[in-house]
Image (tube, rainbow, N blue to C red):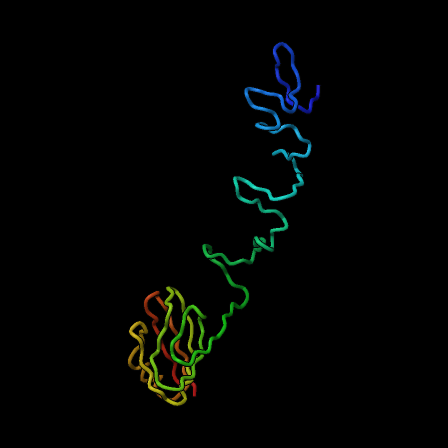
Length: 185
């Protein structure tokens, strides 16, 4: 005996539950979901929905969200909590900043041609950040260092002499530690 409604013992007979029937104080169709052939069940393999799907008040992700509001799966996506091997170049931009003050939030690599003497400074320190400054001090302007820029006196003298230098830096979140190449010009 197949029935689209659950069966219930009603006194001495078995009957199908109908919409608006009252079972244990609960009304079918109001307090309890009445049978509906279009209602998806947990064991359905395909269910077609319209409107916004929710689970506990949160919207459910659907296929059309993937690639627009949800990132699609990509085996090549870098993750912050796993070791990754880069198999293609990973490039950053070069920021031109001629005042000798380098904002580490801007990029990792800088180019600088000062027009006057100044103080070698790194701002927005970020632990673990490293990079380079291509310094073209062809005019030989005097360069000093900020307290949070750790560089040897010899290297400061070197970059204050006319020439083109590559300054490498490593930041520990508080200080930028610098080394300097010989002059390229």
